[in-house]
Length: 170
Image 1 (cartoon, rainbow, N blue to C red):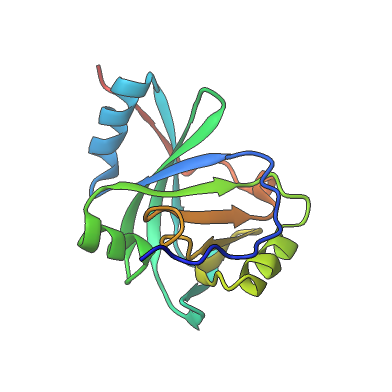
Image 2: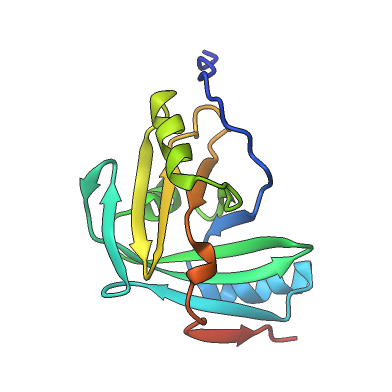
């Protein structure tokens, strides 16, 4: 059955990020790095106290993850290794295994307005939280985008320096 297309009046100015859920970020950074030509990944631990106000399907819920970020041709590539708690990342691993999880746009002038527009179109927030000063929202677009989730965030420029870096082994 073909899903009904939502009446969503949002212009997406760019795809800022492509993200994959992985079992082991260290292994994935080496594999993705070798194929995509990435030498250095920037690592962030999204966990309390810097990670707050986390939700899963609209309910307060604790989870944490390790993110590895790198620039590939002007697009941010993200590898996500779940660390603790049930999340849309652990669900993806259980249901689909490792692989493409979401695409994101961080270039909206009014990210909070985008959240409202998605919700008014019947596309709910699957998971959200605030990392330091950067709120983020994942939308339930899986039915419309062949299993892929859509994300946006506000204040991405406020992300702190990475917790660590990983140099890809040759």
